[in-house]
Image 1 (cartoon, helix red, strand yellow):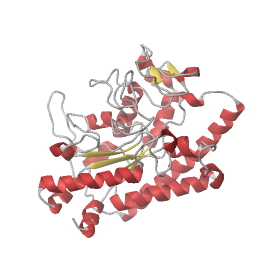
Image 2 (cartoon, one colour):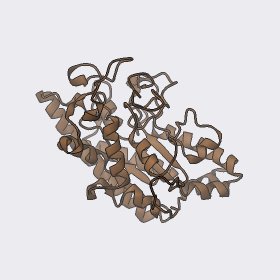
Image 3 (spheres, one colour):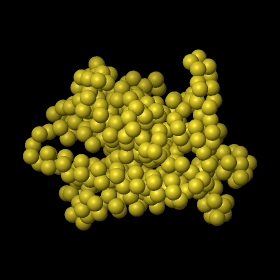
Image 4 (cartoon, one colour):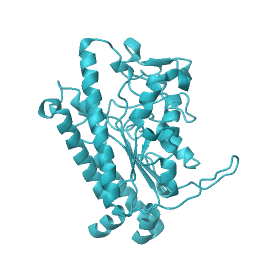
Length: 360
């Protein structure tokens, strides 16, 4: 497959119009034919299972409430993209790239990898991971499979142009890079503004090559790890909030730029960070009783590391916002997924939500 052809049909995404009037009890076709997912541990569903990494979740109590048990999801149950896939009408979960085979890839693939970031060095202290550009390269392999399955590049281009693409990276470039000055030099080399600009440039470069239709804000800004009230942590939290605000504001500007210049594609921004902050600020409104501790983990508030193998988690998991030191419970993921798909506040999505995107 020539590079010119590859670029042509990986750059052109024409959004298909679909019908969303679904009735309970009626099995309807998915609203889009395929759903491709790029990200980190918030949406990883098994890609780190067989690589040399400390960032794994393929053991109990992870998956304790998931129908298939521990799969590599960093939660007790579903992730946000699992919820969104169901709302889009898929009758099964989108498979991880590590095990997606044959006709299965036609409904989409999840390339997310725990500890991954936009920058290649991000998360290296945790071992192996597939950073954003590596995930994009894996998508190229999938594209070749789709060409083979559909019998040609034109058919594949038409098919892939109707899909939705989720890109949710950036969190680890702060949590496992910028905010770890003893390991990484980025916080000494760049101001928050400079670092955010650098990340957006690298992020945008990948998207301009592959062209995606959905961008997510950096997330996990208030995990139990950050609820310790020392002067050092307060200073750290303020710095973190500042940098995330800068990064997320630049993401919205990137969406505007893409939508102005990519006439055959539509891009949206989901403020998953803002949605989750809403849960933290108003936990009781969403049925949560515990917002400052993980359901399982180690240390004060279970907020130092992830859950240990076979550790007994809390029983009232639906009342906890956090599953472990860094990741939400299924109950929280369901809310974030639903609000990403169908915005409840104007700030949830820009310029519109996933439901509207699928209708265009």
